[in-house]
Length: 328
Image (cartoon, rainbow, N blue to C red; front, side, top):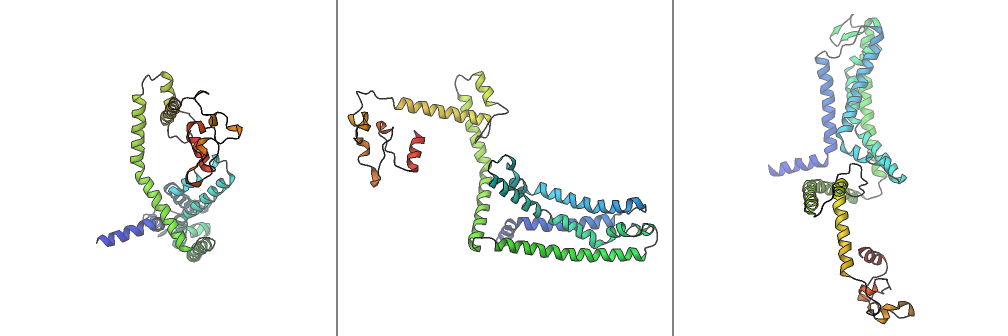
């Protein structure tokens, strides 16, 4: 039983979007059946309203399911998040493409509603049948069910059947083109997708405890700070700050205060030496002499002369030099 449960859980997690679309399609057909059985849809016998009424009913159901899909599908908002404020045009265009792709994924259930309506046939017949022979409801007619009405109903069912075939064929073609244009091999692609999903799940599962721990640390640091002034409270509660990489005004205030204290501690820990205390090779490094701390670099690397040689630090060339300078 446990293995069967794990198998179903794995299938559900791997094909979550597909399962959600299948459930949505079933709900669309059930909704259409419920509306027909309870006589909620009633085609009016008024010539001016029949076409508009039927068309609005079809289009309204399509729009309703589509907007619900956009709201529920979280990847839609992830793709468009911050797109208008992204300075990089390439990133913005990629986000727009992702947003369009995600929007197209949410069209499956609305299209299923349209196909259900056409397979039923009464809605299309209400729009297209002659005005004096339209039905009031699927089993209750204003006037007798005419041959024109039967013809349009059969025509609607044919359109619905071929529409279903075209939809399935389009999905297969789209998936095939996307697979053919993928530059990665199948094994690497599947592993990459599985890893990204596992990474997102791990991050979101750890999010509550990480956020709680960080919030407690920030609040405790702020409240334990001595000599809090009015400007500190104003800065920590600013409603329109430039947060950058920080999460809140209080978080920004605490981190900036910690950074300032670290800089002050470094300054006190390494006081400036006087000229009499500095060795000759460190006083005038421009006289052609190499500082003693750079003559024997570790691990065979060639050391470079830096303005921090007087502090006894060995900075290596390349990115490590930049890292060394940044840490100072």
